[in-house]
Length: 330
Image (cartoon, rainbow, N blue to C red; front, side, top):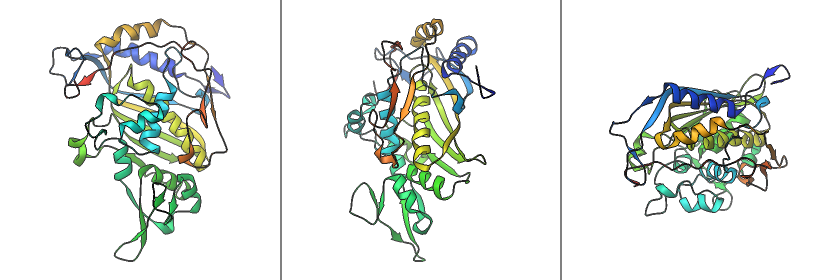
């Protein structure tokens, strides 16, 4: 397909090509001492390829699978839980509409120092003089106001310079507004000193945001490991969503979105479902919508400010598959 002279490639087509690549060329770890198991205690073996990249242009439309229903409430809620709420409390995810972290919930109700914990606590020191009022509005935060979640209290360093420690997504928003052509606007939730205190070290661990010379917002996301049948469709759609939410509050159009995987694997008990996916026809794309009046990242709510028209599981049919977990979670 062509729009404006540019080639369009659907997520389904790129995803199907990856499934076929793994099935044909993947390396099997059957017989190895693997970390993951099924709930019946049997080892969860995989076929995997090393290094794979998806690229989505704005002309491609929103990357959400059509041959398999991927619950938009669940993947939207998960990315808001991690990046907007900066939470590691599993009940917070459930309250938003996502149950995907139930398997990793610990006795204290959290996933320990993983995911949203790192967004909240692995911060960027930023001088107040460099942060515009527009940035605070886009963050949905205030400076030295009433004590609470929506507030930053400034401090003075040894040189009497006023600073705040910005949570990572707030830093992204600040940089994209106040230092838009930087090539250093990055989030990272891979923190070596905390990995031993994580219920699960992050699979998707970094994002790189950049406004290029065409004044569009580009995004690159990197996964060390990707469960291709269950996790990957979630991850691609939720970061594509995050791309659009951030672009709106910083006042930019989106550019390309690149999603890179290192170990891209298909579990042995997902092969039948993958084959079923490849046999299915591809329905027309659902329509993504967003409330363009929203100016604060903290204000976005699924179904109220964004969503997909007619993306339902009676049109886009589910393909259920079991979840592999670590031996510790079992």
